Image 1: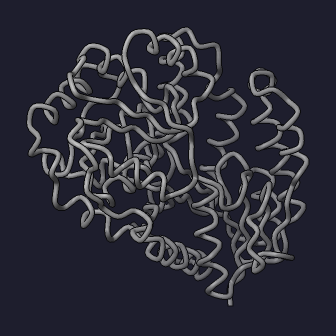
Image 2 (image 1 turned 180 degrees about the vertical axis):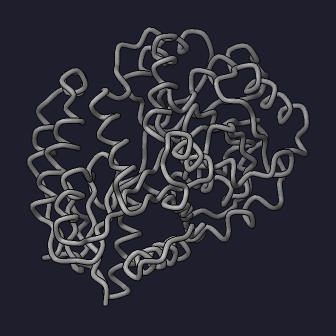
Length: 389
């Protein structure tokens, strides 16, 4: 029987990667293969007690260090990558495979090589060099004084992708950006994330208002600047824009700017799928104009609620969307394209009544995600290689 170790510099079970990691660990545990797990904070599941090692000091430091100061000091790079990586490597128990996320695996890969342990680097976004190029351009354009990635982070993450035994990513688009940077395509395995079809179900829209919904991190990488620019220019009667999520520092000034120029509603971030489901089901159309996104779990959730979506070609979620049938795929970084797409839905209400969006994402279950991971673990241990997705 194989033994799989897992590590993530985040809270196990939290939104985003925390949820992805928890689903992976559930599959490993249910298969009887789970070794040690290293994270910042575990979920409270009794089945994880005793096998999960928490690195609490990182969270304690984050609590007392202002976010702006942490960004300027490179706290994420120093603590969530270098320090966490060192602690995780020291915590690595006997196993056949260790699975962790990019930027957090350098020290573990070194330790694993000495012990003939196979290594998987999980990259949930596009290649770090791709993100850096895209966001440096965007930050200059909007006068934002934040570095998307330091050069040392780029070197660290790039090397991990080149020296590990296998890379896991979540879309063909993300895989292509890694191939463009020299990663061997035979080592890149595309495994799509799941969507909880029991939690995200269609419901009747409660009113006749044309409502545009965005959900996710409210930041420049997610393209909210182009959504707000388009919304200000459209000024549609009997229409609303609702944005639900956490406002990051790089978009704070942007939100203040548009508050006085156009009308929109900001809803707070929530991890409760019931609240998110209500938000999606209130929409005429959901829009996700990301400049970069390895996948876009919110897109799958909105489609599970049978809502049409507008996405960009710079998102892995474009894999799921049938352009012109259950949504539209537009160029990234183009406010006119966002506005034209929104206007098309506004002027043609029939476009808002999609039938097949839910069935298109129905195969993307967490069971399928876990089964693909288990096949990959087995192929690594047996020496076989090949794309699982």
